[in-house]
Structures are given as C-alpha cells and as structure tokens.
Amino acid sequence: MAVNVNTVYETVLYLLNKEQRGYITPEEFNQIATQVQMEIFQEYFSDANQLIRKDQINTQNDSEFFNHVKNIEYKLYPFQKEVLFSYSLADKAWTTTENVYKIGDVIATYVNNPTLESVAELTTVKDYNLITRSKLTQPTKSYPLFYASSLTNLVTQDKTSSLKVFPKPDTLLCNILTSPSNVYWGYSIGSVGQFSYNNSLRTATNVNGSLNFELDISEQSNIILNVLKYCGLIINNGNVIQAAMGEIQQDKVNLKS
Image (tube, rainbow, N blue to C red; front, side):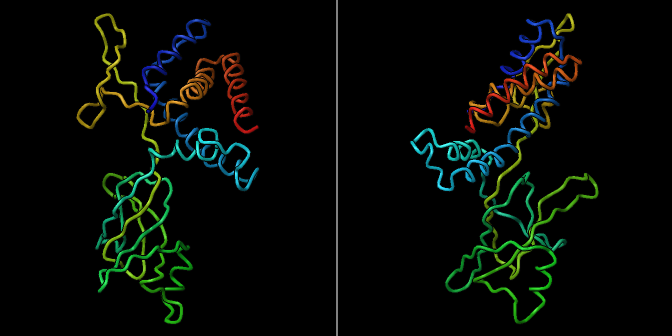
C-alpha cells in the first residue's frame, strides 16, 4: 500500500500551522515531496549494505516479520519489473522507455534448435570492445556479454536506457529496478482562491490530477518528517529543521541498532 499524497500534505500543513511555523504552497510541496521520496528510496541500498556488513547472514533478527534486510527488499518490490527491451536498428542497441534505476539479470534468448536462454555478464564499454573484437575471447551464445548506457532523444531530450549485447540475441528480458515517479498534490482553485485537492490520477491529459508516493505505507512518518525538514529551509525556521532532524536521526538509530 502506497502513501497518500493528500494525507502527507494535510499533516504537514497542520503541524506547521499548529506551531505557527509558516505555510508552503502546493508547488513547493510537490518539489520537496519528490526529493524526499528519492532520498528515502536511495537510502534503502546503503541501509541494506550496512545491515549485511553488520551480520553477513543477517541472523540478528531473522523471524518472519523482523528481518531488516527482507523488510527493505519488500519495500523495493513495487519498483521491480521484468521488461522486454526492444532492438533499435538505428542505434544497434536494446532500449526501453522505462525509468531504469538499476539493472539486474539480463537474459538473452537465442532461437536455436533448441532455444537457448543465457544470463549475460555485465562489463565496461572498454572491456566490451576489447573482448568482442578478439577471436580468442569473443563471447558465445552460452556466455554473452553486455554493457549499459543511455541514449538521448535529440527532439525531446528524453533519455532511454540502452544495452549493447554480444552475440546479438533474438529477445532480451531484463530484471530492473525503476526510479520512483514524481509526486504531485493536484488541485483546483476555489471561488475564494483556496486550493482544493484533486484526487483524480494525473496524466498527460489531466495535468491537475495527483500522484501518490510510491513508497510503502510504513514510510509515511519518515516522509512527513523529511518534508518538514525541507519546509524549515523554505520558511527559514531553524526550529522546524532541528526538530525534524532529531526525529529522523532517532528513527535511523532505532532501525540500525
């Protein structure tokens, strides 16, 4: 279950108003919320690495619902996808329009007799060029090689993820992690100039709609505290920042202790 954007915004406004700390507009909130979501998302990876280093087999809390590493993996489930990449003749590469954050297994399928599925090995551009150009070290269909890059659309300036794979497969299936989408508290303006929440889904044709946080519901308090921290910067109130930072730090200590 994801975190509702309206719940977070109303809570932030309530806490700021209760303490007479100021006000943030929907536009300011949307920018802050998007930044906070990305920061929390990126922390999952460093937190997991720290927990694994602490105990290589993570047995300190290994019951069904209290394994910290498994809990982080659970929070990443909404961002995991299996995606079929498409081959671009113009770029001579496999591409996708998905917003890729990390690439996992890359499965190359070769339609032989019988069909062969192989997990490609990641390498650098330099090593890829050296290995594929040598007859002695050239990858085979059983042990393909790939490297990742990005392509920029010259018209829209949008970037797409790109993979070069050798030998060229017939299809390419990738296990990826996507980046969280931007957060939007959509609204309409009322008769007296007030902001009224619009709970319809934001799309290309409905730019006044909303997009919830994609993080798990367990992150709601963490999101609110981090948003309040940035609100303190915008309204130039150090007390808000200190209070929020104190709560955030205590939460991190409780999680990792």
